[in-house]
Amino acid sequence: MASVASPFDAEKKGALERLARRGADAEVMPVLDRLNGLADFFTTSSCAGRIVVIYLPAVGAKREAVFAGKWHRAVEVEEVLGAIAEAPASTEGALWFIVQAPILHVACRDTDKAVALLRLALDAGFKYSGLKGLETATGRVVVEVMSTERMDVPLAAGSTTFYTDRYLAFLVSTANLLLARGKSKLGRFYEGVRMLE
Image 1 (cartoon, rainbow, N blue to C red):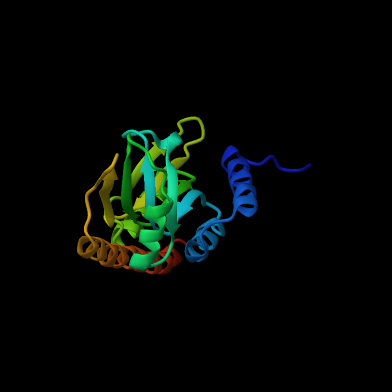
Image 2: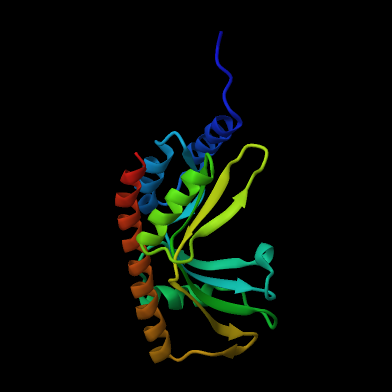
């Protein structure tokens, strides 16, 4: 008689099938592979960290946002200027320059596993990590692995530009530094996950 998969194992199977179809950022794949190879964990979403130029028609209007540029690597000022030139022209809304740290959402079989993973994330430098959700029916706990490297800067609103060439060069330099710092934590986290094996 075949054994029946637990709800956790069934969810994990579905999550891994979605990951296989959609893929993920190359730099975060080793971490995902290591976590997903463990019986008590699976990833539900991830990003290796990114730099974006994004147009938002209104604060919080995420669905209507238009990415003018998106990079998971260090950028050059010329690339950012190119993205700014490609952004929608509008008398409303604003154009933003944003840096986001790596982020992972990891489902854990139970609270003990979640706490162990959270400790590893914090030790690797992901200081904004925490328990994101608890599903009482299955006992599954989601850990959000997140760091402090973030920058949100408005570049323009309507016809008003807020940056100079010199300031944009400073923003790009700072963004590249933040992105590199966040990604270095991925390596430490990858090594830390060995403790769960």
